Length: 469
Image (tube, rainbow, N blue to C red; front, top):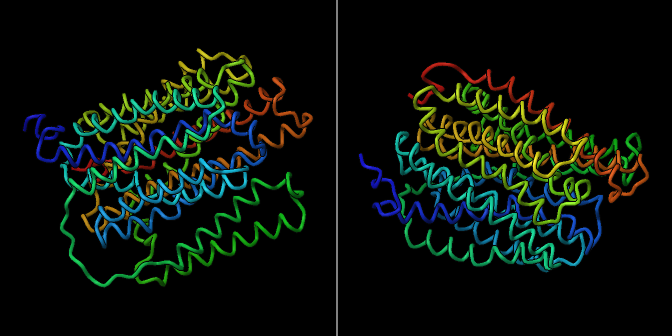
């Protein structure tokens, strides 16, 4: 089969283009916000709360991913993706109009509700319309979106931040959303057998409430109240009870948002667990590298953003040839290789944090990104090859859900670590020594997570099941 058969000029080309544009929404947003955090805080305040900008966005997207995935298996991929784009557009407009940190956090939650449908659905659509061998080539097209976005996002974010027009990091999503919606509505047509469906809204509500309380306890402990105080204990206890109720509901639900079979399939369960840690390592760098470089090395927002961009450049580069590697060596071997790169470079970043250097951090992050690309792509494709069409959305969603939950939870934990060190050193988040100390602790924690990810890679089963054969 020629490469043109899977290109933009092929019969499926318009669908691929719509997927690429929709992916671009999430890809740009993943770097453009982090770059502008110092400018946002300088304008509307709320430094202690800024980790919520990431946690709430990731949490709302994560807890709804299983719902969206279930709806996609029941109602089709197209309506779910269109809904996600529309809500993401609404959230972006509201974020651009935010008047303080609290309102911005609330509106980021709305944006996250939309984002939770976009990336999983684009990946499922690719899995639906292309074979395993074709996906190895198609991945190059999708990776090019991440590559372009990794430059466009930080550049725009840095420019907007330097000129004190940070609100445009959200308004820039408006034309992208409109284009993605139009392309998808026009080009993608699917046949879905309609039937009476049940959605596990109770499970979704319990999971959302439980995780929100746990994140609240982590982020506000030691800030709004003492760790051992009654409010702290009450929040954590309430979150734990709700999570327990969620598990009980899932055992009885006719169509649970997280079916128990996910945890009995070795490939799905091990890959989901691995992605929890992957998400944690990723958010450690995405949320804190720009702030670290601006506060310790004197980088401008634009230069700090470009340093972070090297990671998201390395990611699509390795993703583009990951398909050829897993077809030859298997998913497990490629994931282990990627985990090795992430582990080595994470240790390097933790050590280098004591001697801030923009160019050193940028170089190491590029290799880190290549490691992420070798882990992330085989993870999703490997899972998709082990389940039938009617389960593909839920299985893919479980992996994406795990990665987003890892990001949301670890963002909260790292925020607590950073705030605790800043408070202990006097409370001045702009002091260079304080920035180095707090960031160094964050990067050391990320290195520990990378070591855990490396170990978990070996839990992925060997043999044909893990190779998609």
